[in-house]
Structure formats: structure tokens, C-alpha cells
Image (cartoon, rainbow over all chains, first blue to last red; front, side):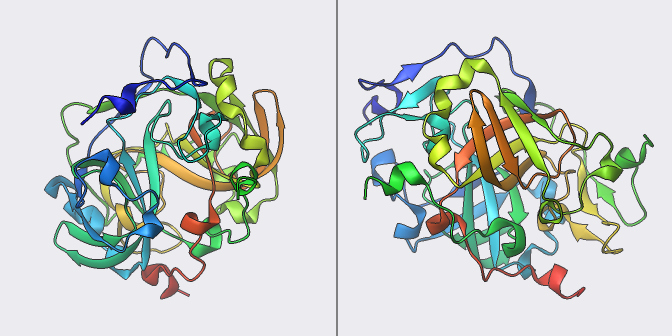
Amino acid sequence: MSGHPFDIRPGEATVAPPERFDAGLYFIGRIRTPWTRREDCPKNARESGAVCSIETDPRWAQALAGVETCTHLLVLYWMDKARRDLVRQVPRHLGEPRGTFALRSPARPNPIAASVVRLVRVSGCMLEVVGLDCLDGTPLLDLKPYFASTDAVPDAVVGHARRRG
Amino acid sequence: MSGHPFDIRPGEATVAPPERFDAGLYFIGRIRTPWTRREDCPKNARESGAVCSIETDPRWAQALAGVETCTHLLVLYWMDKARRDLVRQVPRHLGEPRGTFALRSPARPNPIAASVVRLVRVSGCMLEVVGLDCLDGTPLLDLKPYFASTDAVPDAVVGHARRRG
């Protein structure tokens, strides 16, 4: 694996991070995917129909009651391989700089990913889902029911991405 | 303010949390809303058309470049008033227990909220948005562009909520 994910490209900018953390996270499980190298991950979760597993820690088992009635979940996970000080980034597919908060890049002050997945099956503390694109072993932070009424905005537009075609 | 948010109701269950945190978060700004007491917050963000403000720390100013081209954003914030050890909860509007991961309750191992907002205006480090329902002063964790292609699932169903009517 190259050091690439931690290098800075021309046009990118960093800032000094705050001196201390303000809150702490528990890793509540792990995500199992077919991808062990960043370059193998699908560029976009909709590209892949791969069934991935979410293994929650048995400590939280009771918290899964009712999850099986959801067709879709919002999965929050921790992109622990990403640097946190990039404010301006040059994504390879764009070739020009964007602010970090205008991108879904893993590199961000708090590298929390939010992915919508289709739930295939719940079996004890293990969930099978479709729609993830992360590395095998990625730490899990949260599972939430996906409510179309508040979470689905089919006509939303990201202008800077659209302009690129 | 009553101690209610920290009390346990009949039918609810807790577990001992892990002994230490696995990762740390930076608060990158604050959310300004009209609501200073939990009981005043809208039950559901779509209930309210209130324009709220997101004030990002000037340290991250460059990270906002391009955000103004988005019609909608995914906002992650930290529900710092919530307890983290509840695995089974009895929401008032349901009256019967559900697992924490089947609910959008603030009480969860990692109390990270994910809300879709409509972007009204960007002015320096301040964003005006519609679609939040949190307390005034809530710490901000992340801003992401909302991509309809991956984030919108209009036909998603939360079975346990639907059965209640």
C-alpha cells in the first residue's frame, strides 16, 4: 500500500487541528467488506451490489431489537485511515480544489462516514447489508433507521459536482 | 428543566459502557436554534420551517468552499445532553420498547445526529438552513454535501413505526 492517502496534492491546504478532543467515541462493532486496499473500494456505494456484514459488539445486542423491520439503515462509521487536517482537497475525479465540507472524502476534521444501506438480513448481532464501500475492518459508530419522510430528498443538487458533468 | 432526559422509564434497559473511548471528536462549530428546552424542540424536523444557523469555527473556513452550490446538506452534530448506555427505550410516542438502533433517539452509544437540511444562505462561516430540530448551542461535528443518487431512498420503510399508524 502506498502512502498516498496521507500525502498532500498540489492545491490542497491543511490547518493545525485543535489541541484537544471535545468528546469521545466508542467503536460498537466492525464492518466486514471484500475490500482490503483503498484502491479496491468501489468509488461509489451504488456501484457495488456486494453484500457486506456489520458485526455489532454483543454488549449492544438488545439495541438491535426492531432493526429487522427496516428496509434501509443509515450507517455511521469511522474512517480511521484518513487525515483530519485537510480543509481544501483536490479529488482525483475532479482535478481541482474543493472545500472539505463540499466533499464526501474520508479526510475531514471528524472522519465520520454516513452511508445509506439496504438491509438484507439480521442474524443475531450480525447484519447483512448492501451499499457500503469502505475497507474491511472499518469501525462502526452507529446504526439508525432510515426514514424516507425526513431523510430522502430526491431532487437535491450538488452544483459543483454537476457542473463537471 | 426536569431531570427527565436522564431518567429511565419502565421497560427500558441499560448496559455498562466500555471502559474507554476509542477515538476523539473535535467540535467544529455550534448550531443556533430557537429552542433552549428539550420540550420546545419540534418532534420532527419537517414539522418546523424555522431557519437555524450553523456557525463554523473560523479555523475551518476554507473547508466551506463549494458548499454554497449545494441545495441540501447532511449535518452531523453531537447530542451532548443524552445518556449513552440505553439499549432498549420506550419512546413516549410509541409507548412500548424498541432497540436503540431502531430509533432516532438522542440516547445512543455515540450520540451523533444526522439531519438533512435545506441550505438557505452561506455568509462567511455562517450557514442558514431549514430542517434542524436540536437545542440551541448544540456542537457541530461535520457538514457533507447531500447526493440524491446515494442518499435518497424515497420508498424506504421503517416497519415498526408504520405498524403503529
